[in-house]
Image (cartoon, rainbow, N blue to C red; front, side, top):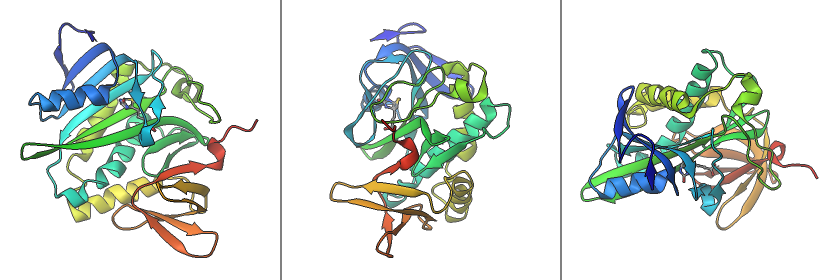
Length: 263
Ligand code: BTN
């Protein structure tokens, strides 16, 4: 492990301490290690390069230099059953940060795919991997964010986007991290309070792919095709299935037709 700012340097990132590394296998793994060592967060881990970035559902995440690979370690100060709400909070923070990086103007074609992928014109721009752990009596979450700032890595069969192609101006990982930090700070604790979570849910819906978007949801047991029908009050995905039934998903991998590369 090498460190970009000196050995395990903790330099201020607006309001949240930051550990900035040149290279690590995964910022999520490093944040978890720091948690095991006693850190409770909030704390960012940023890496210039990941050698074994982790994606959702056991996939890998390619982290090219110039793109953002960062993880936010957070105390989960809420009842365990509310923790999944953090997924929507993270998605809203991500689009708010992207807007801020675009001079406060919503980026054309940017939308959220449940629970928190950011797409541009249907191609994946950013992904979030949230992992939770209990250390002693404390529940902690690591929110890992991969954002293609400078280049879109090749992912077989998938359309992938980079921010620079959408906005026309370069953004460094550190500047992106500051925008994310500000967005997360603004949403702090909003997932643990009913009324305030309702505002997060509404903000998420405002930036979501359109109702009726055709999608496939993969869970461990099944693959279901249907149309996006919104979120239930807890933030779970509602899918209008081809057989006419409406199903609710609290977890699952969502794929849109627009993400698939036509060969
Ligand atoms: C996804 O599959 O869409 C989620 C990708 C999350 C990737 C980020 S990069 C920073 C952090 N560290 C990891 O190992 N993964 C997340």
